[in-house]
Image (cartoon, rainbow, N blue to C red; front, side):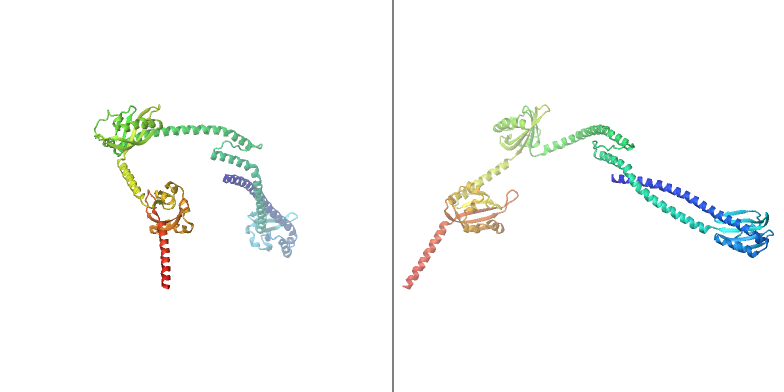
Length: 533
């Protein structure tokens, strides 16, 4: 809007300056022409008056044939620098006297017998009769050129005119800027309101309609139009939105139908080729569809008739009961159910599966059909069972050792994931108590031996193992010597790096070592005393 404001302001200023300039130039040209014409007429009248006076003064000199007097009279014309030549021609055609350059006189002027003025541009040639009591004695011819003073005065007048024009334009410029506040400001305010309405669609704004001129009438009309524009704009937008929605619905209907057919073909191909069991049953429990993987898991051929099969024929009795009493009711209520069940192969064996049941309801909320998705996890169950047995054997072996066995994630040295029951035998804490507190292990170490255990994690990470001996307090406050031996075990995506280690009670060994050292000391003392005796 600033650009628009400047444009209006500039236009008003240019308009005032243009009008002022035209008027001033026209007035100046008129004055200049008038002054030029007046100046020209003044020069002509002055020279003609000088010619009339000189012709009367020459009568006596011509009668007396006083050439010297005549030339002296002609010489008085020098007071007018515009006269550049003069001559006296007698009636017999002879030149009686001349002044200045009489060659500028036209040769044919001697034939004139009466007063005559010939003006060509800035040149003037005059002919005046020299008479005495009505009798003509001869002719006085003058040649004048007033171009030089005429040009100087015209240049002076032109300079004055230009100066007046410049001062007038400057005054008109500031006057136009002052008029801007009365003319363009109300228009700019109205334009700002119009911009806000157009850009922000804010029809609540109103333009200031103060004043008593045509702008107030225009502003009032604009304010009165805004509610109608808002109403029409709302109707137009509503109609456009409805039209877009109809076109969008029509387009979606056409594209959705084609896409649905395409997706149906893709979905059918996916379902037929998926390795999972996929089937549907109706609200009465009758089988309506089984994909290729389902037929294979049940031991049915590709062309086997399933039209008479029911849900109870898919599962063994215990699984049928679970699905009937829990799976289907939950799916109908919550939309889906998942759990571990089994299906029955035609050869009688059970195939353990993870099953998902999905309920499909109609527009009235009633059940239309159920979808079943099952995945065979027999191999996984066998692997889990093997892992469970291996873990039981490992724990059975570990719990027979005379040391405390532990496992902890690297980075949390006191966050144990396993500790063997021997922690109760050696330190007096149950495994649950030992694993519950992250600070318990560090707190039970003798203050003078904490430095031994503190680098365990860093050492195990760097060299793959850690070994150290330190003292620990039991739950009853008894001090016992512990030897720790730990190994670093690299993890994977499912299991982080960890430390697997043993805490061995070496208190008896330390006591025996102390007794042995004491006995050796006594033996040395006895031997020394015996040698001295």
